[in-house]
Image (cartoon, rainbow, N blue to C red; front, side):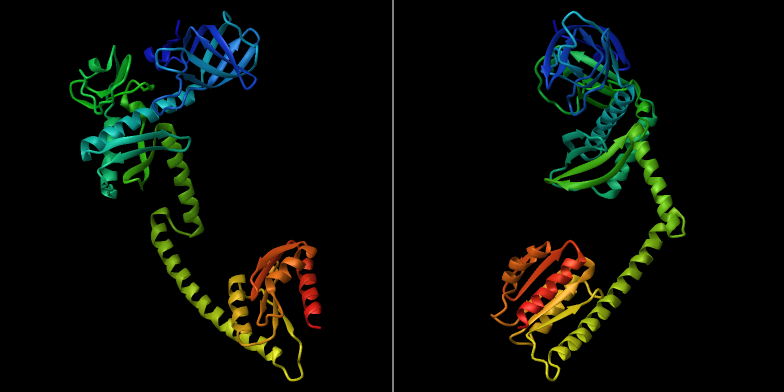
Length: 413
């Protein structure tokens, strides 16, 4: 005997007494079926219910429910140790109502948005996913992307229908052909019994489509629908949105975040966009000035390093240069510009902020990559490179300094 699915008759039922009919074990825990269950098993894009099971030997979590087909048993995956339940045990099942109702709101809202996309733009829903943080649907418009104006129109149209307090009904049919008596939006052949969810009047519905999920009795219980964004996805429109309590929580959190950001800029949320525009202009100007100053600093430092290398009486083959003024990338460019004006020379450049050492060579006598690979590990460093330049990174500044001294001492002889 298969499980009687109470959620099909009453989506608002959150608890029921039942008798265990079968038990299997998975990962050291009991998975059981009952003669009746209010738990919705995952399916149709909707996650399963979770909740608890109470018996004479304790109360245990039900982490999810699943089925093999709509006519068979509903299996409840528990955290009860294997052997806790046996066929014939009387238990009480309790659904996490907050999760159930959120999913009811979200699933019904998804139907209404998909129906709106079909009615307004002829868009076909090719995919649906109900995640923890948002819902997505993939709307196929033959390669065309929705505009912001169209998304705004769809969002407002759905919310108007939500607030119109339309009836939401579930009709059962013995087979797919019989279900076509209703004006279903999308014809999907299906074996066995078929349930059709209708939002609005069956004669002129706002939306009507086959679905095995749970839904509220009135559209007003969806509360609201908020579209977050729309991205291209395989030639379709992937719409990110949410409904009901989940949407309200996100919009509230976003509003608070916006207010906090506005406070940092000493303006109101309404003025934040223009203020950020001014900040972007200032940053752009500062970047241009920084680039000019960096170029000037590199040229000055280049001349200073070359002056030291070419100083009268100096005949050393190595030199060491240290700076925190320039970034590592700028230091790399500076090293190349210096070494290009020398011959038979090894330049060691230290960047203490990132504990990085750069080597540059203008002679086949000094193979930078080999030097780093051979010596850096002895100072807790790692790196590599080519003959003309290499890089080593250290975990401690003292190791960086020791490595640089070792290289100078070894190759200045």
